[in-house]
Length: 112
Image 1 (cartoon, rainbow, N blue to C red):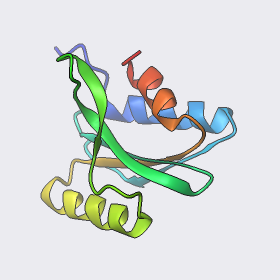
Image 2 (image 1 turned 90 degrees about the vertical axis):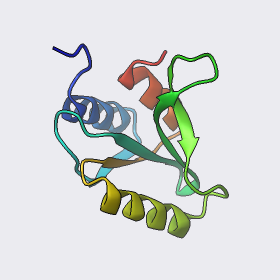
Image 3 (image 1 turned 120 degrees about the horizontal axis):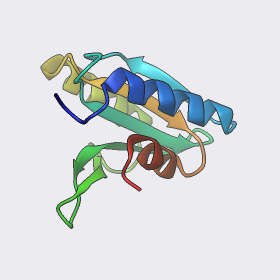
Image 4 (image 1 turned 60 degrees about the horizontal axis):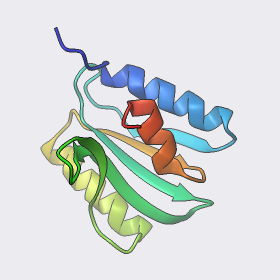
């Protein structure tokens, strides 16, 4: 048995925390409920978008790492995650629009 929480539980907690803090969080694509990978599209007030996902940080521990196209072009990020979904239909894609989105995600998913 895995010690990792099912992805749908992490997504639900993240959506509630962000919405309770006055931000906006929405599911752009649902993946496998138990073991789907999680791709976060983060921004603040509709700007400065980035893609983050669970990975290995520089110290070898689990961390949120930036992925996808740089430059925060929303169209490029949309194209990126849609291409990823064609290769991995289990991928969850969540958009967070709140100040310090990375902190919210890291605290909820358990990286801090």
